Image 1 (cartoon, rainbow, N blue to C red):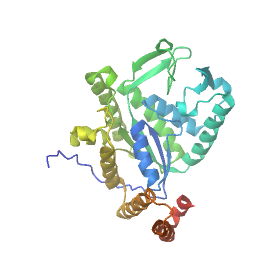
Image 2: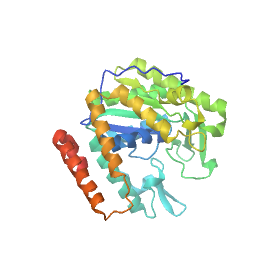
Image 3: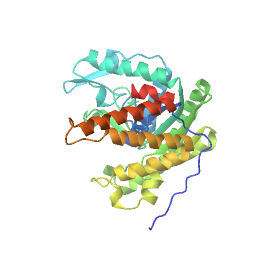
Image 4: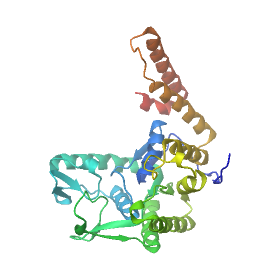
Length: 317
């Protein structure tokens, strides 16, 4: 097998099923976040929706530290829907009241969860940002408004580093036990061309490297390098040839597990993955006696896992 293996040192700090984990960032953060959810980790994934650039992620983290409640003045109406520039379209709705209910209820839950978070997983997607011309604020989502309403530019390495130094100092002051794991999304932003994509990713990588050197509680997981340098074959890409395939995501997930999970946590993860495989089974004859027996066995497995690992019981209820 011809492979250039990316060596990843094992982390001295381990993630357990009892730890609170918050994940923010690009869709790659969602990929790993969903894997962790399925393995019954205690995780909150992208409470503002998918975020791509460092400035939007930073702004979202500051919102989790404050008591701000969104009001109608924080929204705008366009295309028959109410939107928030701080949120993805998942929060948009036909009425301002419904939109605000989604935003504020999620914000309240995520703020409470964030106070108990031990691991913060941040994935940068792009250094490019969109600044709304009416108030000079960087938006998390343009919601398909005309391009002339925004100024598009790239953040510099220095801007990212300076902003995150201040943010991390603030986070550490609130939570001295916090561990921050950065990654850079391997998904290419191709509309600007190959060269500009590489420059943008380089800015992100340089910024993260600087932060890792500055703070003891900051580490880096090389998702970007795994896909581009180790999985150098188009079978590891989806049909658009830009996003990772399910095979690639599964492999990167395993490498993440090797770095951050103890042998005990790995064992629990494997048991839960087998349980999930059983739950995903779709029978040809759901009323058959054999399938009913299969369902009974699943419930027995759940009960035994709950007895063995009581902290999993909330996921089985």
